[in-house]
Structures are given as C-alpha cells and as structure tokens.
Image 1 (tube, helix red, strand yellow):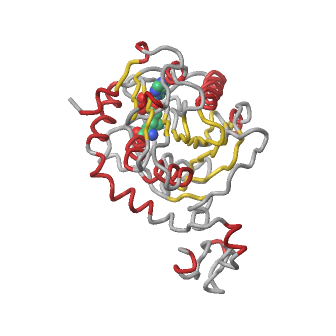
Image 2 (tube, rainbow, N blue to C red):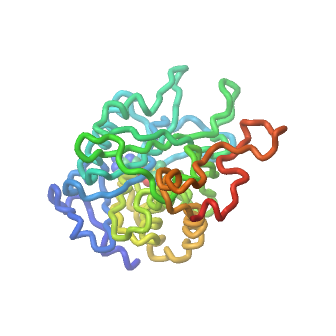
Length: 320
Ligand SMILES: C[S@@+](CC[C@H](N)C(=O)[O-])C[C@H]1O[C@@H](n2cnc3c(N)ncnc32)[C@H](O)[C@@H]1O
C-alpha cells in the first residue's frame, strides 16, 4: 500500500464543501466524477490549477505517429453541445473553488468534425473566467497526419483568471515573464515512460505553478482530471498542497505511486526552475534602465521568423 493512499477519498464519502484548505494536509486525491467532486470543495480554496480534460475526440481519430488515446473506463464520445456545456459547468465550479486573484490553466485543442471547426473559445467565453492569455503549446509532433490541413502540431493552453473585484488585469508576472514567451515548445510525454494514454510532461504543470506562485509554498494546486498525477507531483516537489480528481481508480493508483517516488522526478523540476531566473517585473526593469525584452536578431541575414526573444542579451543582464 502506498503511503499517500490515506489521502485517497471516494466522492460519495464527502459532504458538499467539506474539503477546506485546513483539511488538506499534504493533499487529497478523490475518485469520482469531476463535476460532482468539485462540489465537495469549499469556496476560494485553490490558488492555481492546471488540467487537460478529455477532448471528446470520439475515439476514432487514430494517429499515425502516436497511439490512439483511449481511457480505461471512459468513452470520450458524447454529442458536442453536451460536451461543451459540461465543460462550462466544470469550469464555473473551478471558478467558485478558486480564490480571487487565482489562475487556472486549461489545456485543449482545436478540433474538426466533418469539416466543422470547434475552438475552445466557443465555450470559454460562456464561463465566468476572464481569459488572460492563449498560449500555444508547440508539441513538435502531430498526432494525426492527413492531407486535409497543415499538420496540427500545436495545442492551446488558456490562462484563466479570477479577478479581485472589478480589476480584470491582475498582478504582473514576477519571475518568469522575461524569458518565457506565449509559445511553449516541448514534446508530449514519452508513452514508454508513462502508461497513461495522455499524460502531461512534468515541466508543463511545473511551469504554471512556478509562474503563478513564484517562491511561495503551501499554496493549493488543483487538477480536476489528474490522470497519472503529473500536476500533483509538480505541486509536491514545489512545496504545495494538491487536489486531484479522476474517475479511474487505476490512474489514481498511478498518482499515489508517483507521489511516493516524487524525489526521483526532481531533476525535471530543477530544469524548469532554471528557466525562471529573472526576478524583476518589466516595470522594475524599465525604471532601472535594464533590458525590456525587445526583439534582437543576432544575424541580419537570418529569417526574422526564427528570432528568439532576448537573443544576444547576456545572462547577467537577464538574471538581475
Ligand atoms: C487527458 S487525461 C489527464 C492526464 C493528466 N494530465 C496526466 O498528466 O496524467 C484526462 C483524465 O480525465 C479522466 N476523466 C475523464 N472524464 C472524467 C470525469 N467525468 N470525471 C473524472 N475524471 C474524468 C480520465 O480518466 C483521464 O485520466
């Protein structure tokens, strides 16, 4: 039996809003339907969340490069309007359990069905969240290679924000804004290392948590579709509490095992932390006359589209 199994709860054993910040200790993993379980969490408990929900892919789009995504007890196939309304309901519950000033990062993708495009903004605009940014996750490889369109190598990550009062903009990013752009490049997790059909690479939830919570610890991190537990592992290694929900007992057992062995994944967290080495806001850098992140090509002959933010800037200038 894993040491964290004592944190693994069944939805039915919980009362409405029973999960409070104080009751979390290290964290909670809850087996049940996401929407039902969210109702067991008290208001304003969560500081930051990140998730990748099931995409309603109808389980028929077999990829040529990666294996088909098939969950153990769940058919990812409901009528699209029903799917979108369910996601709105889930996102609004996540909004309720998130503290004002908190953020949620929602990973999804553009899909097509018989020529009709479904874009995540179609339902995100119907939620209570302020959509702060659309981040492109450049996964480098395509899941489906057919000639109907250019190969879709990207997914999207929506940074959703719960404002404090009427101020929709919120605080400036503290540590990571200067080097990180709105395009995050990184291949999906290697299926040979993680048997879950669609796991996050560890750097992704780690980047979210570090960017929002900085050097704070003891925050509460939510992943309402926790799968193999990547978000919980990132939260634990960065000193935070986690709430993870999944309807699959098998995947929650994977999460328990990974949490038990979390220190073995620390090197990946350290790689991510190394990217967050700028400690001043853009406004502070402007006041100090320091680098403001202008585009700087190093080679005039180089194609402009290949340019990188801060190219040519020396490291001392960046890590003040
Ligand atoms: C894309 S996977 C998440 C993978 C996760 N990010 C990781 O790193 O392993 C989506 C997860 O949602 C779970 N799931 C799907 N529908 C659910 C529901 N209605 N309630 C709870 N969990 C659900 C699936 O079992 C699956 O593990």
